[in-house]
Structures are given as C-alpha cells and as structure tokens.
Amino acid sequence: MCRHLAYVGEPVSPRALLVEPPFGLHRQSWAPRLQQYGTVNVDGFGLGWYADGDEVPARYRRAGPIWADTSFGDLARVLRTRALLAAVRSATEGCAAGEEAAAPFAAGRWLFSHNGALAGWPEQTGALAALLPPAELLGLVARTDSALLWALALHRLRAGAGLGDALAGTVTDAAAHTTGRMNLLLTDGREIAATAWGDTLHHRTLPGLGVLVASEPSDDHPDWTTVPDRSLLLAGPDGVTVKPL
Image 1 (cartoon, rainbow, N blue to C red):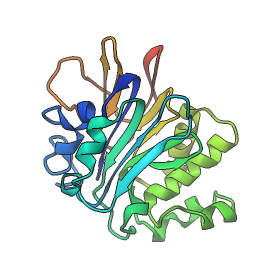
Image 2: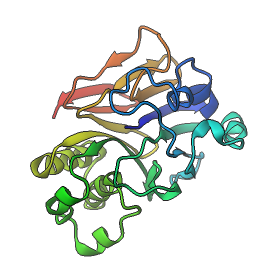
Image 3: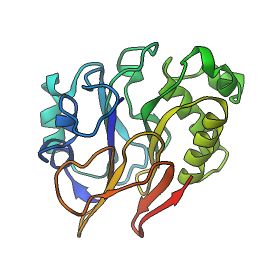
Image 4: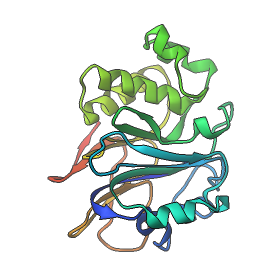
C-alpha cells in the first residue's frame, strides 16, 4: 500500500529524483516492482519540499494518480530543493478519499508519510486512538490510519522528541495495540527518519549530492542498500545509521 521517498542534500529538482529514474516514484504509481500489497498507487499523490531560508515546507497534493496531473511535470522540472518527501497512494479499505488523505502530511517544519496499513481499521484501533488527547484526536487531518499514526508521531515531536524517537515510539505504541505494516517516513528538511515494519525500505547515498530513502530503488544501481524489517533508519549529513526496533 503506497510508495514513498525522501531526500536531503544539495539542491536538486524533484524531476531528477521522481520522474527521470527508470523505476522512479512516478513509475511506481502504475508499475511498482517490489510492492507486495496492492498493484497500483493511483489514489492520490503528494510532494513536499523546502525552499532555502524557509523551514516550513510547501506541498502539492492531488486526489488522483500522479501521471494524470498535467501540472506536476512542470512543477517537478523547475523546482530546486535541498529536501523533499513524496508519496503515491494506494488507499486502504475504510479510509477516506481525497487530497486531504494524500501524504505528505505536514505540521510546522515536519513532513510525514506512511506506507502500510493498520489491521482492522477503524474498528480495532480505538485503544490506539485513545492514547491521543481528545482535541488532537478530533483534529485528525483525514479519517485514515495514516493520519492517526501521524497524529501519534506529531504528539511526540511537539513534546520534544527527535525524529527517530518519535517514529520508534509511534510504532511501539501501535504494535502494542494492533498489527499492521508501519513503514513511516519523516523529515524536518535537514534529516530523515524512517521505519521498516512489514514492507520494503531502501537507502542510497548519491556521492556529492545527498541521500535517498525510498520504499524501493528507483534504478538498478548497486549502491542501494536494503533496510532489514523492524528497523529504524536515520539519515543526514553525517551519513546513514540503521538499528533494530
């Protein structure tokens, strides 16, 4: 369910990362190579990116498939950014449709995406939702399992947790109350945190440019590294670290 990608590094166009690679996120919307759950990702897409001098990211999201949006190609071609997070969506049964349900979700300087699904949504996730203060639960950005996970992560971020701790704590809480696939992706424009929990995750360092973290490789370059299941990844200027969850 879904494919996503994040990048931090030197300025680059979204087109170079998402469209031009032979198996990039754009192509993964209709022909993913490693996706085990669902066959296409046509229920929405989104791109979030950071402009120099502004820590609050901009977003471009739509409810339909990325390849059907005639404006996305121009946007991806002319933009330059040091950090981005992008996703294509395959909706989970019982989850809301529409642009509001498409990742990346955002608050302040953070961008977030979820690749996966919570089992028994929404009937079996009441105890997990109850971990949130009522006002935050009522403020979910969409009626989806991904939005619930985002609210749980955001609650930790606002309490002062770092990117990695926020995701690790969210997955731990979710796993204590339900089952599912919880590959989470989070960035603040400087670093990336991600979890591999039930689905594929990979990373690659682009020499002299930056680092990519993605659901699946966008090409066949041998520098792509597979992240083991049930792991937490942190990536930034100092490199990439992976540890068990």
